[in-house]
Image (cartoon, rainbow, N blue to C red; front, top):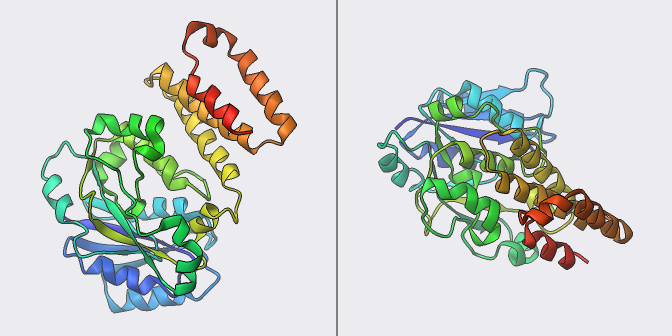
Length: 315
């Protein structure tokens, strides 16, 4: 099993060395691709020194040397990866030694396109733990039970939190499957780009569960985590969710093979976040507008009653 590990690097001078070392400890890893994304700190120089020490470490930047976000950086890594398999790692997180134990067994089956597993959490400082323990606790980020690949996409769409969550750090993909079945990799979202990717990935690819009850990688929590700021509402989370579900909705409406009830549910999710983010008076107007525009759907019985319940809970 030959794995290319892709690491977007932004403002991670203090953490990138640990991330790279954790990837290289896995004998399945043949290369680590560092995609430096015009970081404001000294990360570029750290990456250069790492690449000089080990020819398995390869440093890339965007053609204009600019900042393009994690999604575009991962896309650049996918384009340059030489391994049969692709794995991802955030620059402030790290792999555990069991990272590919289950994966190398599962991928002997050529029908398996991707494998996902469980992510643990480590607090890099006492202040980070005090501030963020209420958000992450000491829980695993994982899908809660094994399920066949055809149930992964519906689980993400309909069950959401009760189904569990993917982590980009525990995802391994067969590169040939990704190139063949996905015409677009990560899209241009600055937040939740991995979530949007997971929705489409689970629709097109056969994803299997790996190790779900034990961490195979660790999320490093510190005071400058980009996603942590969203989760503790330093950045308004509903705004970012509107953009996420707008992307998913646009994709679903263009996907001719998708069932109409799934498209309708995705539309409802997008509308729900629009309502939740609107001022009080506009909330009512939006609900009335959506009910009127979908009057025939309501009569047909296709209207998602869960949307009505959710809408009333947002006031």
